[in-house]
Length: 99
Image 1 (cartoon, rainbow, N blue to C red):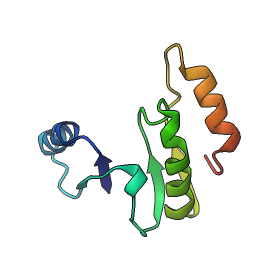
Image 2 (image 1 turned 90 degrees about the horizontal axis):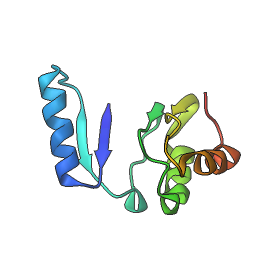
Image 3 (image 1 turned 120 degrees about the vertical axis):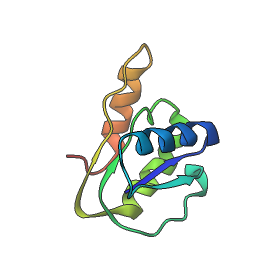
């Protein structure tokens, strides 16, 4: 499992949470999706609160296309809030595979 965030503080919170819950196999990476260079293939790509910033959508699409294993799935819970519905609709219209 790989967990990413571009914000060092957010990633620090993720590390603490993982340690508190006994997760020993998580690899934590501080990375900006615009500079993503991981060539691994993953059975699942999960995201949380990743669809609000529409400027990240092209980078996320590229990551999903390059890193989702054949037959793999993706899940990003539907965002909520005033901007969520249009944002979610645009993502779903152009996002490729999702199960």
